[in-house]
Image (cartoon, rainbow, N blue to C red; front, side, top):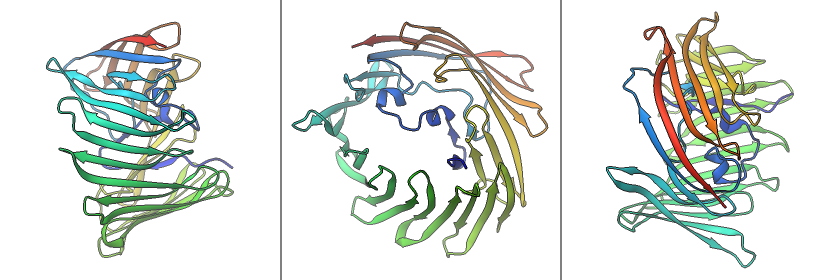
Length: 333
C-alpha cells in the first residue's frame, strides 16, 4: 500500500518533485526552499541564451521560487517579488493575528500602486478563503473546506459576479484520498478520478463540453494498464501525468493514439534534506539520456545555497553547457 502521488499535468506544465519531499510544509519559507529562520533574501539571476527546453513533467531546472522576499519570524512572506528595470515588482503583505498571536489573514497590496491584490483567510488547517484583485477589483474568489483530519475536501472558485466557475470535491480515508471530481462552469463535470490504496490502482476520466467521455486511463503498480481517448491530442487534459511515488525517481507518461510513452527521471541531491538537486536526468524507457541538468553550490551555515551554477545537456548541445548562475544574499532572524 502506498499514498498516491500520481499527478495529472496540464499542457506545458512542469512539476517540482521537491514539493512532495515533505508530507506537510509548515511555512511559506520552507515552500520557497529555505531552511532555518530566514528573514530576507535578495537574488541575482544570470541566464545564458542556451536553447534548452524540457518537456512537461517533473522539472529539471529548479527555479528560484522567491527572488526578493522578506519573511516573518514564523515563516510567512511579508514581501514577495523581484527587481525589474531598477524597480521592485511585487507585493507587500500585511499579517493580521488573533488574540493568541496566530496569523489569521494575509492582505497583499501591489507595491507600485498600493492597490489590493490578494486577501487570504487562514484557518487551523490552511487557507479557507483567497480572493484575487486586479486594479483593486475582485476577479476570483476561492473557498477551501477541510475534514477533521485536515484533508482538503472541497475547493470552490467563483468569479467577480459570484458565479461558480470551478469546484473540486475530494473524498478521503484517514490516510489517503479515494475519489476526486471536478466541475467547471454551469456545473459541467470535467473530470473524475478514483484511487484504491489497497490495490494501488488509480482511474482517471475527463469529459468534453457535452458531457461525453473524452479520455480515460487506468494506472496500477507503476504501469498504465489501459488508455483511451476520443481524439489523438497530446495536449488534452489527462494525456500527460507523472508518478511521484519514488520522489528521487519519478516517471512521466505522455499518451496518444492509445499508447503511453514513459520517461524516467533520476535526481541526485547535494544535501541530506534533499532540497537541492546535484543533478537531474531525464531518460526514455530504454534508458537513453534525453535531458540533463547539473548543479554546483556554495552553502551557508543554515544549509541554504548562496551561490549556484547550472549546466544543461541534450543531444543537440552535445556537451554540458552553462545555463544559469544565481547568487543570493540571505539574512536570518
